[in-house]
Length: 129
Image 1: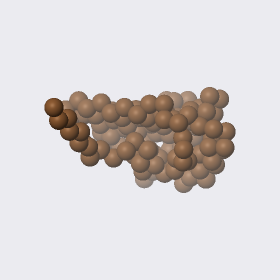
Image 2: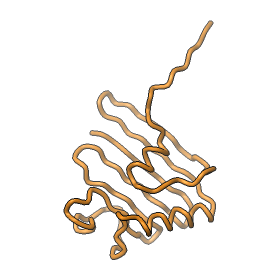
Image 3: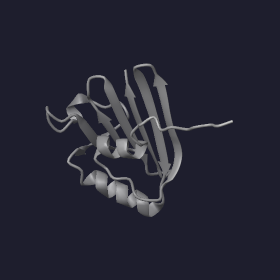
Image 4: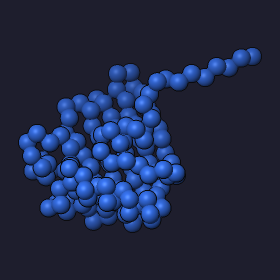
């Protein structure tokens, strides 16, 4: 019996995170979840990583120096339109009580990311509907 595995050609979740958020992921992170759910033309990607304290500091610094970071917001996961830095900005990073949150405002492709600095976990979700 011969079993052949082939790649579906999907961009790795780490690359999708970096492309969507503008934040590089440190090397040697522990991947907690990397799931791709295909629903015909729709899909969902769930990706989460566990960070060390030095990796957390590295990502936090990248967020705070990002062109998408709004330092004037301390919000929740319910992103307000006025938090985007300008009319042409399609995404925003902002602070929450537990870390940082990212959201975009594209038409049908949604992206969110959450950095929980209390438990050192970064979560990323992307979906097309």
